[in-house]
Amino acid sequence: MPENVTQLKQPQPERMSKAAQFRQMLTSPDLEFIMEAHNGLSAKIVEETGFKGIWASGLTISSALGVRDSNEASWTQVLEVLEFMSDASSIPIMLDGDTGYGNFNNFRRLVRKLEQRDVAAVCIEDKLFPKTNSFLGSNQPLADIDEFCGKIKAGKDSQQSGDFSVVARIEALISGWGMDEALRRAEAYHDAGADAVLIHSKKSNADEILTFAKEWDNRCPVVIVPTTYASTPTDRFRDERISLIIWANHNLRAAINAMRTTSKRIFEEENLHSVEGRVAGLSDVFGLAGNKELSDAEDRYLASRSDINAVVLGASRGSALRELTEDKPKCMLDVRGQPLLRRLTRALNDSGVQNISVVTGYRSDAIDLSNIKKINNDEYETTGEASSLACAVDDLEGECIISYADILFRSYMLNLLLDTDADMAVVVDADWQNGRDSAPKHRADLVRCSVPYSVDYADEAPVLLERVDADLPAGEAHGEWVGLVKLSGKGSALVRDELKAMERDGSLADSGLPDLFNRLIARGAKPAVLYITGDWLDVNDAFDLARARNFT
Image (cartoon, rainbow, N blue to C red; front, side):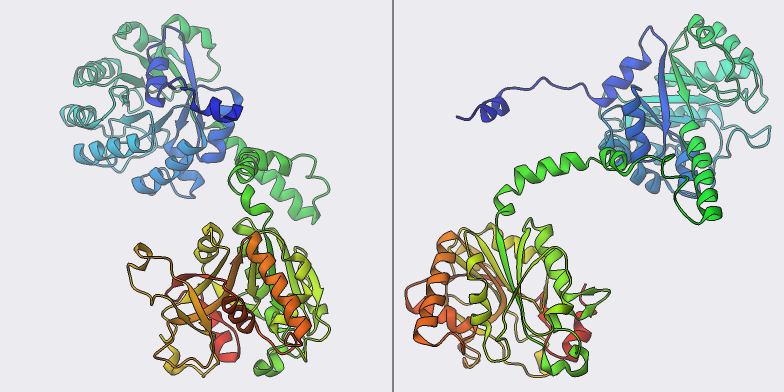
């Protein structure tokens, strides 16, 4: 057994949950710190810096979304941001949950949804919904103590993990209600089940906070937010056994200054010269986004596809398109801002197929894509598709995709092909007649298969291709060949040999791909059929081009 497989099978140590990590911080005898973040990127930076936890600030999430900190962003929109933050980081997150987004019922649902997203804790404040930021105005009304205690109890009763934490934020000092009221509320919230209390103040010194901590005497963990009393030495908080400090909004505030400075300089100077050395490099952006991990994953999971070749047949002009193809082949016609061929090559790239050869002919010079190898069929006007394929015979090696250049299709079709083990496989549209009554008549590559399509055909024996023929009677046709083929190494060798045989007997120049496959079937090949129902189209005329522009 390979060494790396052995390592994968060894039991891995169980990682402490994020909720347990946060509770450990909250109950630690040491003063702990968490840092503000407002999206996935800033969450990554907080973790990268070394912080053990994240404060998902209501103010900064709202501001980053471009709205006020007054519950203008709905709680589901906040949850969406949190999901990105949680996925982007491995350290615990405490959400600034404002007032719990409503009454006890809203709050207990919030707790369940936070746990589903692996958020470790939530802090709620004893004010009224919709909330007003604590630093705006004065004498803000506070929630009824009994009502807020009920909200805390509902949150604690609904949590699934014993480690999830609910922190009760006391706004009595902010609203001018005094120390006695702050202590009274702290006692009530602690009795209701709060895992910690957050005492808030907007004074420029920490006197109120230190007095509260001394009076509270560590009956449960105390959390503080020293935004306005930032000059107080941190050791003062250690002396009073504060449990957790939140650095609440400085990442967003720093980003605002940086973005303003950079935007202003670029606006004024109309170039990037003076800012390029002052901003993060793209490699840093890619690093934070995890591009290296994706590259490694592609090597692991797409390795079997990275060596697959693709041969795309794009030699024809498409005469039915008239003046639209006067200066370009039809594969370069624009479909919603991209040529048909670019859409096809990107679909191949997205499925892990990188080695793409395009057989060109008419106006080859107009095909200017950088990620392809061009092979010209100089005799495209007098030869068929089989001759174009023969031009790329050297690229029919190993596993290979063959495709027409003028088709659009859903990406799952490529994945179906790439996942098959058959030596030859073709995609067939069993719903080929749908919508054709109103469309101009084209010669379709109709097929007869060993088994007609049914909704449960996948549970039966493999479906095999028996014939491709545009003149098949409608009663015998089981579908239309889409123009996509996948060959194994053996299948590629069979196709190469047959193309050489066609060249020897003089039939190559006048043959299309259907002729090639009918010859292969006659020699005993058994191409597998992968049925689909719609989700593709080919572009033959202006009507098709209009349909292509509505293809999403």
